[in-house]
Amino acid sequence: MHLIDIGANLTHDSFRRDFDAVLERARKAGVERMVVTGASREGSRHALELARAHAGVLFATAGVHPHHAGDYGAETDALLRELARDPAVVAVGETGLDYFRDLSPRPAQRAAFEKQLAIAVDLHKPLFLHQRDAHADFLALLKAARDRVPAVVVHCFTDERRALFDYLDLDCHIGITGWVCDERRGLHLRELVREIPSNRLMLETDAPYLLPRDIRPQPADRRNEPMYLAHVCEVVAGLRGEDPEITAANATQASGAFFGIA
Image (tube, rainbow, N blue to C red):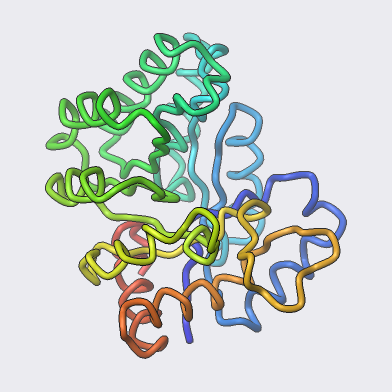
């Protein structure tokens, strides 16, 4: 099985103590390449540093998550533009809207999202997007830019059928995480993964978050890491009625082409 984890928060402090071991465990589990999520100014810088230090294995995104949108200004915009020009940065984001937690004011979220959409348009980079409880506003802003960017993935998709098909209608890719393994809140997603075309489905851990609840044994520290992507792939394959090797091959092909890392 050969896999690409399209979203791993490897800049998180929890990975500092055993970073090399994390990468080695991922490799042994078939996760050959990982995209390190940039979700803040410093996080995007750090993601690029990691990608440069592990060229060909790690790649980076550069963006500001909606939780940090209140801090987005001209200096941040200039930094993201600088980072996104680096070949190791394969997408703009994580950006989007999050009305579930509302950690930044909604007008600030929308403004920061629009600024980052403009970066992707200007630099002709794919978009790595986040949306939670903000579908209508998110869709309206995305539609305005969609035909001017090369590719879009709505990462960690957890929304309903209408949202899924709205994104598919815009030729977006869909990122699926271990949320699909959660019997408490992922049941609807188990039905929807069957509806995602194989050339639009990508897999991710969102490590260290979203540890699959059905992993046995559960790690004592409850930390998710890229090696568990193989488990997510097996669960998704079962739900789609596919051999895991087929699901892995299709997702890897789609991810490699999307990010230009095939």
